[in-house]
Length: 278
Ligand code: C2E
Ligand code: MG
Ligand code: MG
Ligand code: MG
Image (cartoon, rainbow, N blue to C red; front, side):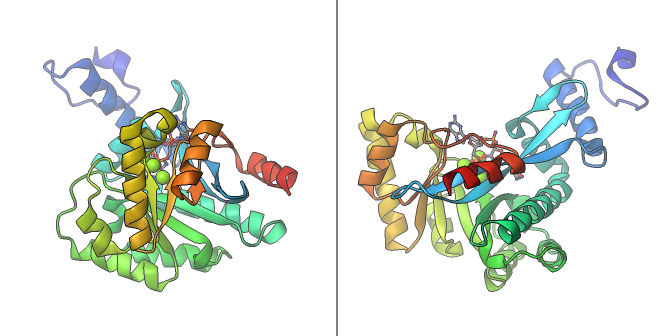
């Protein structure tokens, strides 16, 4: 059994582990070498201004091309990366990649273009996070003002002075912060008030089919009111059709992202998309 599971590695497991657990363990082992074996890459999904439809920036989304299993979605491997701590290196790599790609795009074509990068609270809790970000910004010619970090809470955030310190430092550096998937998971209002981000991203579960769902309408309206009152922007995630768009505009949502405009694409395709729109 262990022979067909492994390559040259030992597997510490016992027969009581179910196949799911075994599979996760195997995947985690593969993830440990994915960075150095060049299996990760980044795609970009446009973020548009709802009023005009103009693309003002993009979100960087990591992908894993596994040599045997093919493409693996971040929803599968990011949780593994978070549990194992690999997210610290993976996250820093994504940030640097995104800064390099977008810095090129800015200098050649669109100087005002913005980029949003996802960061895990696990990264923010590390006291060397600020140093890593500073290093990237020193190496890559990109203005911190065009950089936005999207924070998703993957766990209930207990008091962490390191987290607070990271948030403070990032703001001082001129980087803006957003709360991702707002309204799901562990994000709560006390947290919004405490870290005072610039933007709330409304989770796509509330956006999907909003034109025909009065509960979701009420929720999105409420989130927008909160954001407005605290002088934050709102981005609707997962906008897929014109009916949803119309509704979101009527509610006063300022920014959107979704298949209606574009799926996540390579940096090359993003540049082409922007040139076509210009
Ligand atoms: P997210 O940050 O909320 O990103 C939005 C997700 O919604 C992306 O999934 C995107 O492809 C998908 N999406 C966008 N528009 C639509 C739409 O119109 N319809 C539908 N059905 N889906 C849409 P993706 O790329 O699979 O990423 C999933 C999650 O993985 C992200 O959710 C984020 O939480 C996490 N993730 C991705 N890259 C990174 C990263 O570099 N670091 C960290 N920590 N997490 C990441
Ligand atoms: Mg995000
Ligand atoms: Mg989200
Ligand atoms: Mg998410």
